[in-house]
View 1 (cartoon, rainbow, N blue to C red):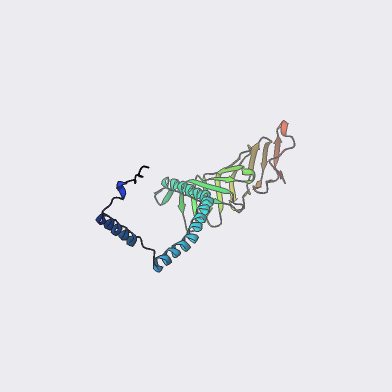
View 2 (view 1 turned 60 degrees about the vertical axis):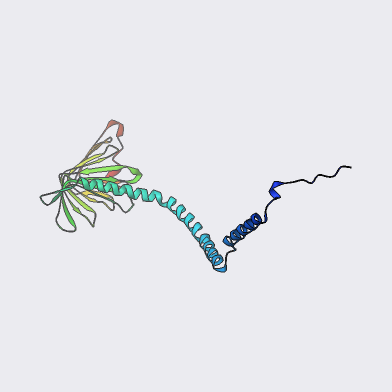
Length: 242
């Protein structure tokens, strides 16, 4: 019977010195990685509580910023448009040249007034040269009114036009008169002097008119005269004459 051979591994053949060094190294590693104390645990618990509030709050802030960004973008572009308008303005002999004024009426529809030059008389009144009023009415239709001179009462939003007043509406209606008064907030245009209206319906002469943009009414005061086109025998410019 043969004697069993005892296996021999070189990695187990360590000296006592080597074993002692390895044990010392392991003990030093355990000291460096000791368990956290109470102060460290308390600090970690505080950080976790903060994270439970800060992370959801940050997510909510991001959602709100996404929701309001279109409005912020609109304000940025509106500010850019205002800056572009300001760059076109310069002062000449105490008057603003190339001025533009924008606002909205009581129905939140925009209107714009431009003028070749503006001379501010006081905090309320401004005298305009070659004013043009660009107005949006119901159904997103537009009206442009121009004249040689005008007076704009800023806080009341009243525009008084004199000298070759011309009103043009995008449906083809054109009205001419020596004077016209515009209430920009209420969307009403009126004149108490002679007026000529031309359009697809024909030609109408009258002693004055009132045009309410938001109500869709055009009223002409008589005595007057109307000449209808053959294909518009019963149509008048969205209103009546009296």
